[in-house]
Image (cartoon, rainbow, N blue to C red; front, side, top):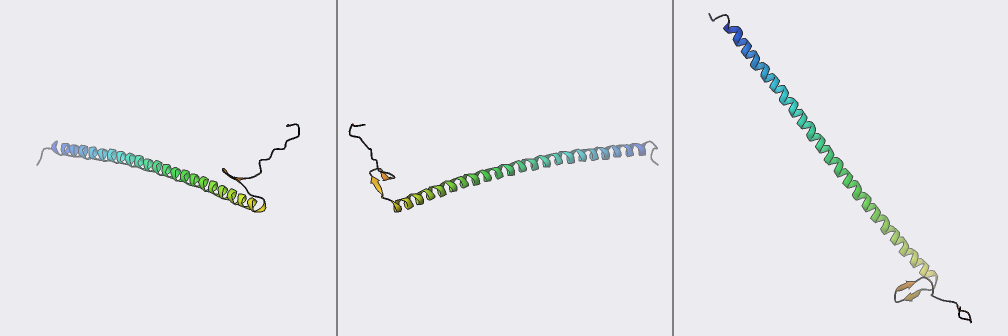
Length: 108
C-alpha cells in the first residue's frame, strides 16, 4: 500500500498541470481571437478603400461622359446654325459673325 501522503501529492500535481494547461489554452484562444478580429478589421478596411476607389473611378468616368455629351451637343448646335445662315470661313476656321466695322465720314 502506498504512503498516504503520496496520493494527495499526485492528485495536487496532476491538478496543477491540468489547471496550467487549461489556463494556457484559454490564453491561446484569447490571443487567436484577437488576431482574427484584427485580421477581419484589416480586411474590412481594404474593402472600404477599394469601394472608395471604384466610386471615384465611376465619378471620373461620369464627368468625362458628361463633357463628351456637351461637346457633341455644341458641335450639333454649330452645324444647325450653319445651315440656317451664311457660313463665314477664315484661315482660323468657321466664324460666327462677319468682322464689320462701321465708320463715319469723319473717321470715328
